[in-house]
Amino acid sequence: MIRMRTAAAIGAAAIMSVGVLAGCSSDDSGDAAADSGDSTQMLPPVIIAEGDTSASCGVGDYLDILVPEGELAGTTVDSSDAGVVEVTQAKEEDGAMFNPGGQCMSAGSATVTVTSPDGSTRDIAMTVTE
Image (cartoon, rainbow, N blue to C red; front, side, top):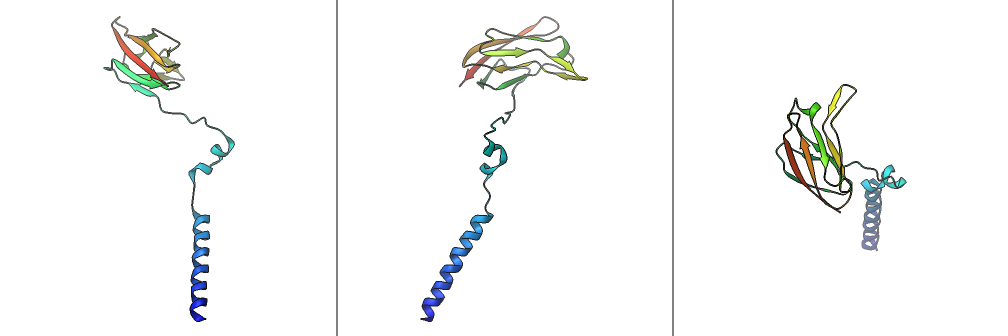
């Protein structure tokens, strides 16, 4: 009889410990944003370095096209297909300079041409995937 009580006590303690541990565990998927259905998490941009002549991105990704310091103000960018890659020009806003860039709009290929202030150009072959 004592063995049965001991086994029952050990079993009860084990069940209670599992319950306590389950209550203490954390699950990142239970945060407020996930519960509200808000999935507006921003991904970092695809960085295209000064020497890059090709790059790939996914639909919806943003681009940051790096240009040599001192040439930012006079640099322009153009896309061969704005439906695939839409570009944005370099700009100054609130005293800060922003690189040219863009957004990958749909799957396909496009060429982004970067024109420096001295008139030299660099083509970037873009591949956009789903």
